[in-house]
Image 1 (cartoon, each protein chain N blue to C red):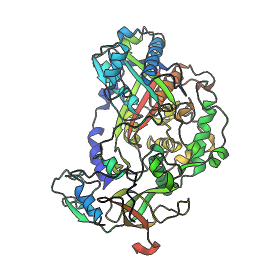
Image 2 (cartoon, rainbow over the protein chains, first blue to last red; image 1 turned 45 degrees about the horizontal axis):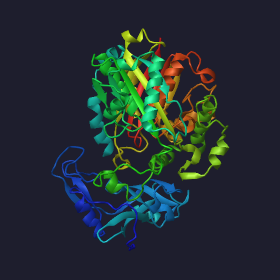
Image 3 (tube, one colour; image 1 turned 90 degrees about the vertical axis):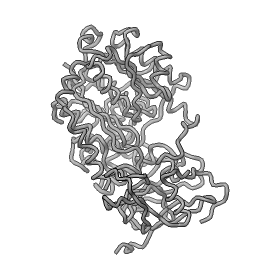
Length: 146
Length: 403
């Protein structure tokens, strides 16, 4: 999914707390912050657990599978970089690890009825420039979570 | 996980002594409200001009001179909003508050102003707003910290207005509770009927459910008429002590309950997409006022989208969770219905310059004073206002009453 240099959408600028996440994305791996005390994943990356405020949190690799928690089909681009793409689909995906990522869906028909809440999806990485890969999600067969 | 985290955050707030706060609020009255001279499409006025006009008009409504104003509250006049506005208006305040919670800012500022007056910190507080939501389109966005969570985890996928964010929340509500496009359209149509009775409303042509359902998709699940207007407008509210209020031009409107909550900024951090913080600010404000839902005569709820209204009515407890759709059906919230709602025509049909939260306060005060002409709710004595800011992020709930 390599992109040309003319990629015009905002590219994430990794911060000290998120650099590891974005580096792993570049390797096409999805890693999430995890709190050993709560035994839970959390999102987004922080140096501490926003639930128990423990600071000894760690990174764990995620399965990359989840379900569409919700979605929206955009018929109008509010930013010029998306103009060529409408209609396109944004979504919040609930991962098997229990956290929800704001993302976009690919390889779907952007039509009401064709995209559904709870449809199973898996991560796919889009290389947008030399150092950045964005996690997006594409549909999985319905029985993928059996 | 998010829900559990959320409970832990909210419990300390629930321990507030609402009786003590109720006694404080009784020492304060709203005595002046008004819009700027023009609202709608006003390219020939700056935002500051609209602040100033609204302040002058609301002070005239109260019968209070500018020289008495010792507290300024606003968030829409730049980074140091009250500092800018005080300089512009020629006021040296003793109390200043630039609380910025998006569209709910002004309702939350009203709570702060009331408590400051009750505590004797200031005597006359003016809350103002002025915004060129329509005429400033394309004039550029404020700088954004590239390390902010939203910049890293949302902007790469979506850059745009609130519609794309609220659509995600609405879609989940439709999925979980079976809320329909027709039910959302009921709100747009009922609100338009109120606007047709308000000479200041921008959209006054009749609108039908069929019109809403056949309008284009802006962002699914929102049709065009599910979305608020984008206008230019200013508004202001004046508060003072109960004592000073006796000498004002109009009868006082009392602040019976006032409460604030926020649960997240980004959708990424939103604990539950089908909820809003009105579930916390609403019950606290009503408990403070000592009222039940059935006591309320008129409800003014921030309507950035039809969905905002539907979910807020649920969160405030006017109906059960997930029952917002059936609740608004049958034009129940329209003129003549048994649940008068957004009687000015709302952000959907009256005005919405970007942050709307001062306008439902203005309308509630006018209803309680009996000033609303054709759209007057007969004998309205008790009003509830709920303003929402951000992406269903921050709410201020007010219970206002007339003698």
